[in-house]
Image 1 (tube, one colour):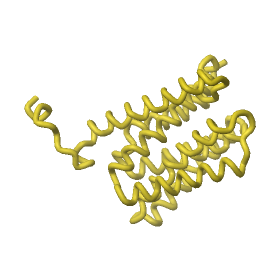
Image 2 (image 1 turned 30 degrees about the horizontal axis):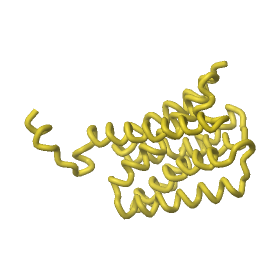
Image 3 (image 1 turned 45 degrees about the vertical axis):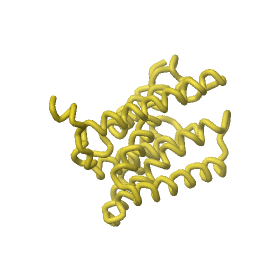
Image 4 (image 1 turned 120 degrees about the vertical axis):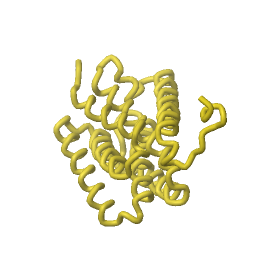
Length: 197
């Protein structure tokens, strides 16, 4: 069975994973949407409810970030950390998820990510957007394509290991692509071999 709602989260996740460090506004909107979508999905909400929570998350994140723009890196870091935390909360709780355990995991990772983003700015945001976006891509793939549901919700140890390996690989790919595309924005000087080419 094919679920078009999964394609939405896949597209937003790809945008965050491979383009998130380019624009703070884009990162805020994508991370807010993903967080709203993933948190509602933790509790088996329907597609329309998940989309609505995603929109509310995107708009809320953008409004709050606009009001406190000088703390934008802190806020984007917290949002993208929360997206990764939501994925981690889902992975460590097989079966039905507990609100309390999910909240503790999500908040702890969001706070840690926010502090890292505030301290290390673009370099931390590069990692955080890659990790959060990769998480959203895997959730989207699992929801959009029924045979690949194991990527989103592993049902065995082998599937869990493979899903986590895919998450890491996709995060690293997002990091590499963003690092190459936005080297100027990140303040990265090209190597001598790249500069000569």
